[in-house]
Image 1 (spheres, rainbow, N blue to C red):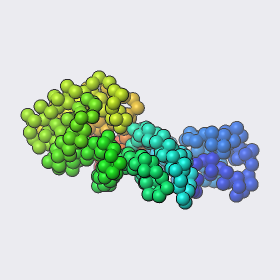
Image 2 (image 1 turned 120 degrees about the horizontal axis):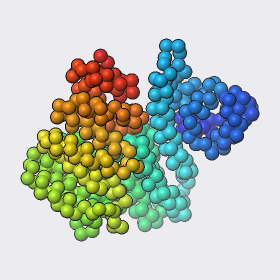
Image 3 (image 1 turned 90 degrees about the horizontal axis):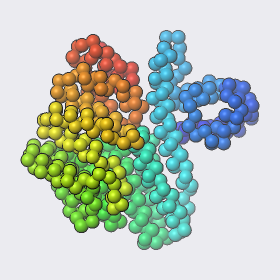
Length: 421
């Protein structure tokens, strides 16, 4: 069970073999899988088996399906299509957990007395983990497994900070890494729907970055807190102060792309304060500074910000100003320009477009936009996207049209809304 909780099929099969003495050949006969497949599973060469392989392992070896992240074996009253849909959602969630477990497996036990050589190895592994965690965040969103992983990595970096034998330089590097992982923990929790925890992680990251004299991460924390205050917490004055503070910290060293992001953050705060002239002035400055592509002096965390994201933030701001049609137009245009690897952002902005269409009175159009994406939203860890889908579903059901009620029922079947007619 411990191996299954970590999505470690190699460990699970080895545990079964050790406890029962069953051979790979017997496992092959019981599951219908080839002995070669069983061997590769046990040796860790197939870290993420297919749904069909997992079903065969569960049913052949007596593993309850729910322990493997699959729906229970269907009875006569259950239709195969519903079972398959449930399995796919749970399977994708399990794959995310498996990926998180594989990242953590790179870390061994921390020595009781850490020396400089131990600290250097630890920091090297932590640095290599930063882009991998960001990739998983873009792919799977704020799943519980990734939120937990980010917190564990931040603590791991903090352990180096607290070790007495690490040099000052290594301690400062570890403090900076702890701040970066705390930043990612905040974004993952935000995507997972926990605003309060996200805010706490970002505040902690801000403190850590200031101790490490890590200006890039300090600006990242201020920018993220500004974004949350403006769009999620209805604290426009605070969002404005945070954006302006970020610009002050970034003064003299920030790349044009980073300055553009901070200016559009400030512009959004002016929109939230219902000051369109100030918003227009700041968003034009942001547009003039935004280059067509990345530059060598851009912070690594800035990868998400491009022309498409700029237009997405403008669309959100126009929504705050009550200009739903203008907001909808920007969403439609920018969705076609989001890079393929930013799957989470694409889903989120698709649901925001649907919300904007509902605000404009086009409930049917909103349901048509969302229908092809219901399963992807259900499989993702983004509770923000799910929240928007539920809002559209309730508007659709309230419309009392056959298409609206049908869409609302589809969201129920996809596990996105428990409300039924």
